[in-house]
Image 1 (cartoon, rainbow, N blue to C red):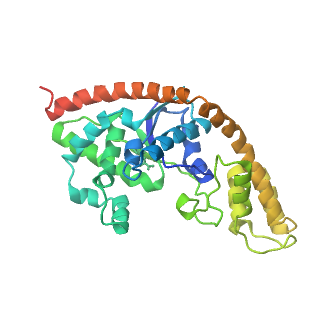
Image 2: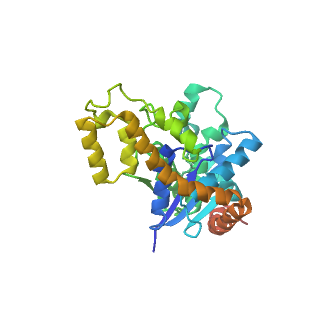
Image 3: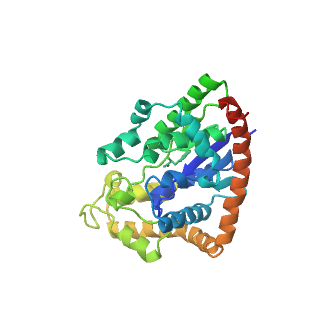
Length: 323
Ligand code: TRP
């Protein structure tokens, strides 16, 4: 039997090629090997997005993005977190066995607290809602970026705590920190991130993608000069696209000299567009038929909810609210 995989994605606006290679592609690659559940973490998003139009637009956008990138609704149970109100109920039971000092140790909370003293309770409680997402589905593995590893540990701790108080109920999920998760550099060489404004959009127009690629920062070596592929921001991005042999040829061109940065950028642009074009078409197809997307989410929710309700039945009994 396949192991059960679960992961949530925050609906946080336009995605870029860093998101694709750093996370989305991995979900898509994993969907064949696991019994996969992927949901849009819209309840988590409310900790930061408190605007109706933005939130509902982002939810649909992220669904379109993932479908366009190859997530297959036939293989993956894709749903929206808020369709499973049971997770908020479970989070409450967890809240009652969780202490404040324990949550105060969460890195994400500490960072938020440094920036603003007025952290909302939803953000403070973020790891507990996430624990509920994971544990209510009896997930075996949770693929996450390294920054989310601590959250999976919170889910494990919480499962153990509950099991100790109420008896064996939850299995302990394993984080799946994908080994070759690419740290994708942005056009300025720092990690590609929306907050650094150094991204190459995944679903931008040809023009927008071109503009970002042409702005990739390089040193000022002329065409004939030998160049160092290992410190070149363009080369670092080529690595995501080119197979070993093609990359080796490019590597040689760099070290020999004769290839301008402009040419290297033009090659990269073609590589990006080759990847993006079919995905963009798929995205447009789904965007024209939003009811189809809503239906995919609805069917996913139905399946996930059946599992959640079964689990809640046991949990309510253990907690003592079922009389
Ligand atoms: N915290 C995750 C992120 O920001 C999103 C998330 C919410 C999640 N619930 C989850 C991920 C459960 C994995 C499992 O990326």
